[in-house]
Image (cartoon, rainbow, N blue to C red; front, side):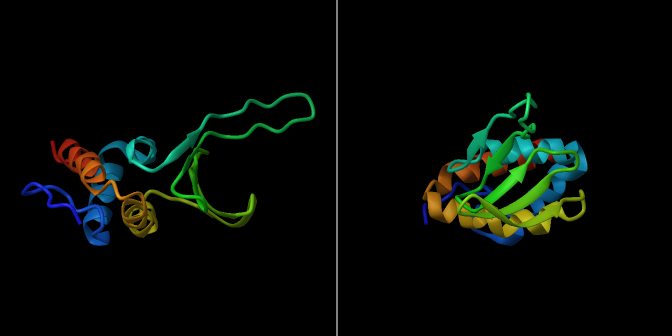
Length: 131
């Protein structure tokens, strides 16, 4: 792991990530969580596709790796996708977001190797939430 500056959030520490997400939900709601997730290194975002003739609309999404998708619906939905097939769908209420995302974000930081960058994003979110 990279040596982080003092008082920075360790993105591989699930408890620390849970606290940042909890503070973000408290100050900005789930829309702020979506913004936070989109800023993390290693994520992929997809734009919404509007509904068309014989084509359903598809909401915007933030992919936390190849199998976890934060679908930007109202309320957001966390999807577990394997081979393009949704295996599990969980509607995310504000109180559930920290626990659901803590492990996913920590794993993403580990996989991407961008520990310092993820730490900077999470630390900025924490500081913004705490004023």
